[in-house]
Image (cartoon, rainbow, N blue to C red; front, side, top):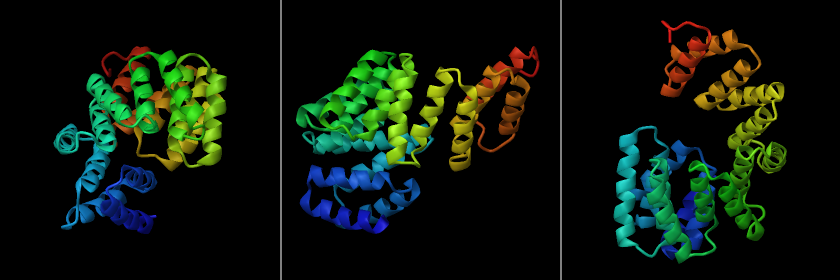
Length: 277
C-alpha cells in the first residue's frame, strides 16, 4: 500500500489533477496515519513538492489530539486555499480542518464552495450531512446522505452517515442493516462496528452491544470511545459497580481523557459517592 501511494503521489504531482488527487486520498485513507504522515513529509521535503502534497500532509495532521496542531494545519490550509481558490479538493480539506475544530459554520461554507466547484464531489456532500447531524438535524442529515447514495450507492461514508442519522431518529433496525452492509465490505471498519453497537443499544440489546464493543476494544483499545460506550452499556443493565471499576482503572492509565473523568464522576454520583465525584 505504501508503494502504491508513493507511485500515485508522483503521478498526482505530474498531472496536478483533482481526479488523481481523489484516488490518492482514498489510498492514503487506508494507510496507517503515522506511515502516511512519514511518506508525505518525505515527499514535502523534496524540491518537487506542491500544494497537493502539502494539503494531504495538513489534512492527515488534523487527527492530532492537540488543538494547537489542528489550528496550525488549518492556518496552512487557509494559505493554500488563497493560492488555489478554485480547487474543490483544497476547499474540501479546509472544510475538514474547520470541522475538526467544531466550527460548523465555517466548515459548511467551505463544503458549499467545494460542491459549487464540483457538484459530483461526494465527500463534500457527506460532510454537509455530517454538519446537519452535529447540529442536531438528523432528518436533514439522512436526506443529504440518501441523496449521495442515489448517485453513488456504494459510497461507504454516506452509508455510515445515513446510519448514524437513522440511530438518532430512532430507526435503529434500518441503521443496523446499513452498518452490517459496511462491515460485509470492510470487516475491519471500526467506525461501523462502533455504531452497530450503538444501534443495538438503541434497541435495548445491551448484551449484543457489549459483545461488539468488546471486539472493538481488542482491535482499537487505545481509543477511549470503546470504554465509554462499554461502561454506559454496563450501567444500563444495572452493573454500575463494574462500570465504575473500569473507569477507575482508565483514570489511572496514561490514556485518561476529560470525558472518562466526567463519566466516572457521574457514576460516582449515581452511587452516592459525592466526595469521590
